[in-house]
Image (tube, rainbow, N blue to C red; front, top):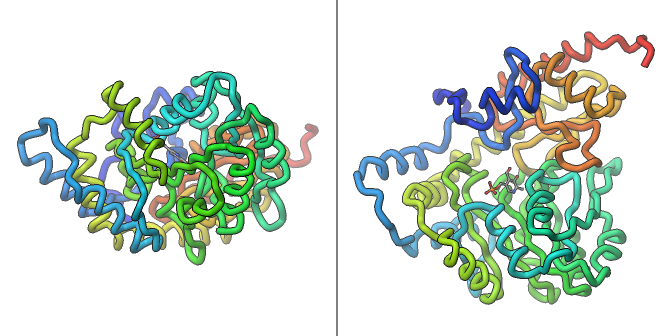
Length: 394
Ligand SMILES: Cc1ncc(COP(=O)(O)O)c(C=O)c1O
């Protein structure tokens, strides 16, 4: 399973696109690209087989989404997360970004505040800004025990009457927290008190690493009085982001109906015939492959723990196949660290400041990759640290 038989240097793959690499990392030869959050291994055979047989059908016309497609998700959610979807409403959406964008348009007005918890996934801030809403920052706090939410700050920000919406990332990209029942309950209670709508982006839900368990926000929200929606889908789980098929779920029919009204008007609801085939196959037959992916990710976390050179720390992920590396001991500023990572270590990682200013001094590495590739990345980091002249004047 950890083999890579597919050529991932295809020129149209964002991860290896030459123009993007030069733009982000400079003109460096032999960069090891571990910056895009997708698995760099062969994908689940049931998904690949389903896509192959769907492509062989020879018709790709307008297709109705069969009931089994949504049912396959709920069977999966019950098995993997003990999450029963009875009474919930589900809408299909091409992407997480689409769902958040549409909800912002429908549930908030220009200028109103949207809480983000940086360092956090890079798309959120531009989505809020593009909708002409105001980003309200409630940064996570890094403690000895890892990242945690600043609930006092969150309460203060939510209490501002212009704050109407919060994007919760659960599990959290890039810091890898799998939020606990207590944390989620506290967030729900705060937002309920101040009438702030929560959309929980749970696209990394299936990627909790043992012993951590993903807690669906939908199982916490009832009883707290908060208004909410959650976003799920197979795109991260099975490495099929290019297939564009996600779900928006809420207990409030008005929320999914509002979404469907906009997406119907803009024709965002057309089914992608390959999306249906891939998600049903993944949810119905991809569990063993996913378990292997999670075992590989956990093994790569251990490799990083044991192999990272002195001066580079690891914020151990509780979930996601992303590792948040801490370079602060190297005392480089933002441009210096980015240049050093690309030119000296020859690694294309996502620099931490892309996720907000709190990410300065960190970088994100995708570790859903064969262990020899992660070992290679560790060697490159060790060589690059070894070449630093710590005695030089700053
Ligand atoms: C937390 C999170 N949400 C959303 C996405 C992207 O979703 P989409 O491409 O469907 O907008 C990513 C991709 O890395 C992500 O990490």
